[in-house]
Structure formats: C-alpha cells, structure tokens
Amino acid sequence: MATNGTNGPEGNKAKPAHRFDPNFTDNVVNTMGPNMTERNRVVLSSLIRHLHDFAREVELTIPEWMAGVHFVNAVGQISTKTRNEAHRISDILGLESLVDEIAHKIISEGDIDPTSSSILGPFWSPNAPFRPLGGSIIQDPVPAGGRVAKMHGVIRDMTTNQPIPNAVFDIWQASANGKYDFQDPDNQSDNNLRGKFRANEKGEYYFYCLHPTAYSLPTDGPSFALLNLMDRHPMRPAHIHIMVTHEDFQGCTTQLYPKDDPWLETDTVFAVKPDLIIDFKPSKGDDKCELDLEYNVYLAPKGYKGKQLP
Amino acid sequence: MATNGTNGPEGNKAKPAHRFDPNFTDNVVNTMGPNMTERNRVVLSSLIRHLHDFAREVELTIPEWMAGVHFVNAVGQISTKTRNEAHRISDILGLESLVDEIAHKIISEGDIDPTSSSILGPFWSPNAPFRPLGGSIIQDPVPAGGRVAKMHGVIRDMTTNQPIPNAVFDIWQASANGKYDFQDPDNQSDNNLRGKFRANEKGEYYFYCLHPTAYSLPTDGPSFALLNLMDRHPMRPAHIHIMVTHEDFQGCTTQLYPKDDPWLETDTVFAVKPDLIIDFKPSKGDDKCELDLEYNVYLAPKGYKGKQLP
Image 1: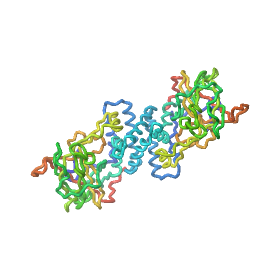
Image 2: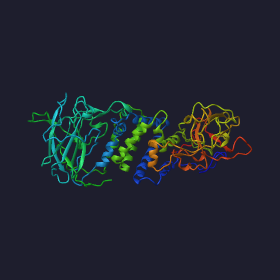
Image 3: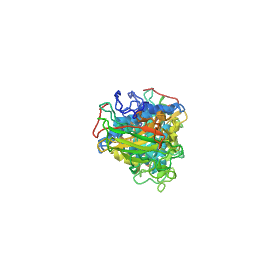
C-alpha cells in the first residue's frame, strides 16, 4: 500500500471506474485462512458476498445498519429455552421453508412425485404414543368449536403405486384454541391431539382427529415488529402436521391445509404447497364424526434421487 | 391452488424446469402489504432475495440453518449495555466499513480526493475537552512501552488546496495496553488520550500523542467463535482515531495506521485504506518526543458531491 498524507496533495491518481472499492469484498473473503473446512468456506464466502451485495444494492445507510444491529441483538435477548426468536424470524422470511425444499425436494422420473415436504415446526414430540387403527387422537373432551373428522388414506410407493404396509403415520395438531398440548397444560393432557398409527397390509391408515384451526404467531417481540414493518399478518392457515416413515422409504414430514382456509395464499411462514391442500367433506354413515378427510401419501424409496434438474 | 391427495396419484403434470419453485421468493416479497414505506420495501425485498439466493446457491442444509439460528440468538444473549455483539459481528464481516464507504465516499472532480472516511468505532466521546495547540493528550504518565510523538499537519479544502482556519481536529486513541480510558478506569483518568484542537489561521494543528498500539477484539463470545471458524485472527492494526470538522465542510471521521503495522493487510474489521497509512519518523530537535508524524487532511466543502460514478 502507498502512504499518503505526509507528502501533500495526492496528484495524478487514476480515477476509479466504480464508486465503491471493487476489491473490498474479495479482500474480506480472502482474509479467511487455510484451516477451515471447504464447506464452511463455501457457505461463509457466499454469505459475505450476498451481505455486501445487498448493502451496495440498496445503499444501506448507517442508521439502517444500526437498526439491523439492534434488531439482531433484540432477537437473541427475547429468546429463551422455550422461545426461539431467530427460528421465527427465519420462518417469516421464508428461510425455513426454503431450506426444507432444498433438503427434501424430489422430482420423480415418472408421473407421480412424492408428497411434498413442509417444515417440521417446533411442536413435534418424539414421545407420541402408538394408537390402534381406527382410534382417536382426541384424548380430552372435544373442545368448544372443535369438529371431529375421520382421516384416512393409503400410503404408497410413488415409483410402483403399490401400498406400503406397516408405514408409520405420525400426526399432531393444535386444539380449537390454536394451542398444542405443550403450550396449553391447563386445558390439555399430555399427548392430546398426537398419535402414531401403523398402516395395515393394504397400506391403509385411519383414525379420528379435529378439523384444524388457524392461529397467530405471538404478537410481541422482534418477529411481530418485523411483520408490522412489512404490513403482514401473523397468521398461519389451519393445518395438520404429519410425519410418515418406513425403514425402506424416505420419510415425509409435512403439513396439510384445508382448501377453504383464508390464509392459504399468505401463510406467514410460507409452508403451503399445492399437493398439501385437503378437502374435508361431510361424513356419511359414521356417527363418531362430522367430517371425512381422505389423504393419500406417496413416498420415494430410500436412495431414490429422481430427476436431476438445475 | 389445485387440491391433491384426495384424488389418488397426480398424473400428467408438466415437469418443472428448475428443481426449486421459481415463484417462492417472489411470493415472500409480494406478501408485504401496501402500508409500508417505499424505502423499507426496497431494503427488505433486497434482503429477502439475497438471503434466499444465498441459501439456494450453497444448498444450505437444515443443520447449517439451525446453527445460524442458534448463532443469532447467542449474539443477542451476550450483548449488554456495554457490549454490542451484533455490531462486532457486522464489523468482522466487513459490513460497517462498507456502510461507511456507501455513506461517505467522495471521488473528486479534480486531482485531490478528500481524506478517506473510516469507521467511528465504539470509543469516541462527545465530551473530549479542547486543548491548546501544542498541548498533549497524554494526561497520565507515559505508560510502559509508550512512545511520544508530535503529530502535526495542515487541514485544507480539497477543491482549492487552501487551508481551513479554525477547523476542529478531534483525536482519541488507546493506551499502550490497547485500552481506551472507558475500558481502563484503574489505569487511566477520564479523557486521557483524547482531545480537540482548533487549527490556527494557516489551517495548522499540532500536539503530542502516543505512537498507537495494535490490539485484539475480545476473545470470547460468538464473534470470536466466528473468527475461529474462518481461521482469522482478532487483531486490529495500531491506529489513531480522528474526526475533523468545520461548519463549511463535510466532516471526516477516520483512522490512521502506522505503515509498518503487521495487521494492515488483514485488519479484522477491514477499516484500512491506502491514504490513511502514516509514517512515523524520528523526531529532530524536540526533546518532548521521540517521534514525528505529519498528516495533512483534505475536506470537501458542504454540498460537494464529486464525480458521480456507478
């Protein structure tokens, strides 16, 4: 580097072609040393380049940058063992859904794609009990406003269309007040609205659950402040979580959404996909329920990669 | 949206051209409502697009995303009134220096550019006292290892090369232990190594200070963990902070770096620019100091925009 300042005015300098130092970002990236994993180098280099490109593209001001600094600190400060605000922020920016798509998207070589993946969310439990086929996940009395549905379908191999006997269908859902058992110990017993079912020899599963209820993300903290700044609502469409697994197939963790839900197009965590939209119909000839829901699941065999697209 | 699942296999679908939903990011951006400022829309749209492009570009995995979520929470959780970890993270990623360049870079129409800006840092004080020209900012005894220098120069209008009488030259620096008065109450009195000087009729300033000392950022917390992950050191090159102001000129806040400092090329906050590199020389004929430092400052008049480059 040339020195300056001690020699009076800087004369005869070639004028740059760009307002900003074109070497700045390369310099930051190249300051990383040799003793890091290649994967970390790839991820952090891309992160730094996008961060800088963002700042230059919008000509980020010093007050805007400082607002971002305060925001990041506030996100961590409101987080606790039971509240993960950075997770929520990444959800409302679409990042968790995108990462889920990157991890799980399979496009088949044939006509049938596997059932789309969607985000796990924070309310899955590893401890949900197995229940008999035809049983109910509604362990507590049906809550006010709750509508009972019989849910059923067939779990199939998407490459052969053959059923998958013994596949495990794990389901969990919020109650009619929009809360999961974890969040609602005064009203719900443990494992209310949760359960695992093992498909029969025909790949069939069936049980009773509730028509799901839309709910709002918490309306305090940095995530809600960000939603307000973006003039967005905090609503998730009503949904049922499912996780379908079998030792010979790639598991599918996803969510199902009633087709008439008003928040489908604007789900605040962007987790809706067309094949996950379901149609509750009036039940016929089953006095245990008001509604009927058929949903068939397609799994890809383990190791199946599908069509390799760019 | 079409429904699925209730109608058996999905057949006859056109295969997509890309592995990932090409409408996903537009959908997230377009979910923002009409009641937000246009500036917020521009900034947040760009932020979301870059965040998603980053994730797709590196095919960010779920464990990597979750590591990022935990990292953001940890950044906020270690921050206090006197420790701003998100600020430090943005510094080690080069963001504060970039935002400073975006805010302050002026490329002159003529031969002389104004003195480059650099980041303010967290240690400037609005309360530093004015001291007489020829005075010293070394209020406490010279610390062990400290070398006294006479610093002097002329503050000029970069458009005319004429001196700027009465310009204010504000200087602050860490002591030989790498700490500022704020951080070191046991060893330093208030305003030690700080002071403001008013230039004389010839635009000249001169006073005594220390040759600066390189120091490390804190070696705990998420910022140091990130430096380790990147195989980077936590060192800032030795530097003197200056802020030069006059009511008719655009102020210049910057930092000056001895040309022989080993950390110049790899400053961990990327705040070094070529015209900010200084050359301490042996003092001749002044028994108050060991070293001599000449540094001339060039300011742009208020309203001067300079060459408009892309």
